[in-house]
Amino acid sequence: MLLCLLPLFMSQAGSAHPPAAAASRSPLSLTGAWELFSAPREQLILYQRADGRLLGHMAGSPGLILSAGSLFGSSVTLDFAGLDGGGAFDPGVFHGTLYGALISGTIDSGAGPQAAILARSYAPLVEELWLIAEANSGLSLHASRLTSAGAFFGGAFVGEGQCDFIACGGTLTDWSLSGATHSITTASGGSCPSGGTFSGTFDSTSRQLEGSYNQSSTCGPDVAGRFLAGKLGITTSVATLEVLELLGDFCDALEAESTSAVNHLHSAYLHDGMTRTDWALRFAGWFSGYDSITANAIPRRIITADDGESYPLLATPPRIDWQLLVTGVPIAGGAAEVLLDYKSGTLFEDSLDFLGNEGGAWVIAGNFQSGPLALGMPIAAGDSDLLVFGLWPFGVHGGGHPEGHPGIDIEYKAGAQVLAACDGEVTSIAPNSHFSGRWDVILVPRPGIVVQYDHMGATAAGIAVGSVVVEGQALGWAPAPSPHRTVHLGLRAAGQPISPVDYLSPSGAVIHSALWSTARYMEELVEPLSTNAIEVSFPLTASRSLVSGSLPARLEFTRSDAASDLMTYTLFDATDTAFEVGSVTFSPFKPLAEIDLVPITPGAATRLGVLDIQGSDLWIDWSRGTRPTSLAGASHYSLD
Image 1: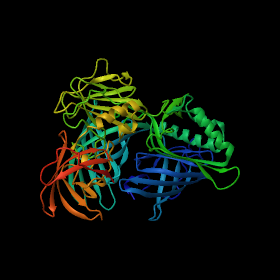
Image 2: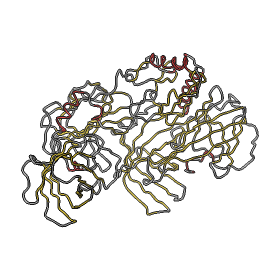
Image 3: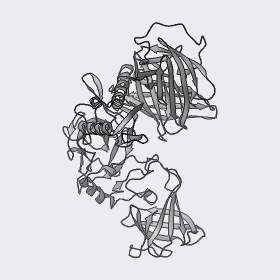
Image 4: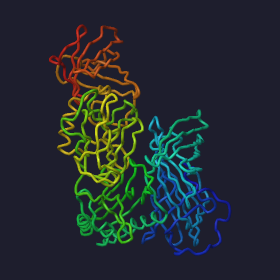
């Protein structure tokens, strides 16, 4: 259990039944913000539904959610769930009694109850949500920084699926600012207590925080390195409570089978072609076909504003990441059925994520798009080049991206234009951090989606931050060669990289297919697809089985690590028994790619080969004497 994320429930000295405090605005209501009685560092914001069930948000603790809660009479129950870099954990259940503006009780996470006292809070806090990444490995943390009147108040962090960078999770003991300089310290408990310090400078142009970090642990050597960080967005105590009210009232209306449920959607709601009327008809179907409808919401992350410092690749419009589970009992009888199990985080399944403000109240807004995302290619037919690779695909590990290539790279001929792949607004134009004289342009086509064009040449006349462009419009020019004229096309949803290839329009797919047919790159033997998996482990092996021809029944190519082009091969006979293992020399940058298979076990003469790879298909021929000059006699293999 990540105890460092639970200072809100630390054991408190004193009476188990404190004297009554000044009455809150609603003595038997938990709606509002609460803090640890003696040492506040986080804020628990609660909204009480009509029947006493509670929705909550743990501001300052990105690893904790309130999975269930209730107030019956004066008895309070809060059931928490947790997730950090090591996976899910059980923070425990709080049981207490409401005494006006105080709640006295205990929390038990399996080690026995610990006393805890919560006090009602009226402190107007701001919650900043950050992503902090180790510059070389790409390992990252999610951090929540709380401020009060601009001063650091508290917060915490959790590893994003990992514990190697700083810790699985822990508290922010400080995050202070002096001009553009950020100084951050962390502390983590558990079996290996550790600490971290970060010192970085915020660049107001790129909106990125960059600097150095030091990591110390009682279980290993100190580690130092570079980090990058970007802000996703912010929310406030007041706005968070208003969003919880929206979700709670929406659920109450669904359970009451009220036509007012649809009023919690924007009057102009539209999401990928789905309208508010479509939702109203769906609700009506539930109400007419089911009784005993229950609707339960679990908020996970709330963003209600961009303070102008959000990192362009991570910035998002107001949104809520949450789960909504709706069940009902068929009128004809039987067991309860799931009517809706909505979970944020499923790619492009975000119809209830985006927030808007209408009539002074938060509503669910949709993305205001009439259809699903469809991208063209950022290059005109005939404007490509093949100086080196032509097109370098998504997910490949190498070429400066050991973490996996988060887009596709396209070679342009001299003087070619870089085109907008879709309609949208230019939200950022910044110098590229790796290539002098090149530019990164970010285009937002719809809420939560970012299209990036990295290391471009000069931007076109009239293109500036705030420009609204249409698909096919020139954004700028291909860069000068170094050694090739390459532009990176990236696509991100809620900050996460996804393959643009999977969302190409028919016309975009035609151009991509033409480029892909001539693509060639060092990693192609083991990562041959136009969309390769980013989350892989090394050594990485690609296995292929014989479709036709006279060569061995199966072959494997293995790449040792993401930072090296060293590869080995293994040949298998018809019984799938390995009979030869050796090293590989691969030369893809020729009109006909060449490969040398140098046997190690058993020792023998080198197999001199030629090959062509087209996605999952491989054509290869070899000889121990003279290298073939064509693929006329090649064997055909398919990726397993």
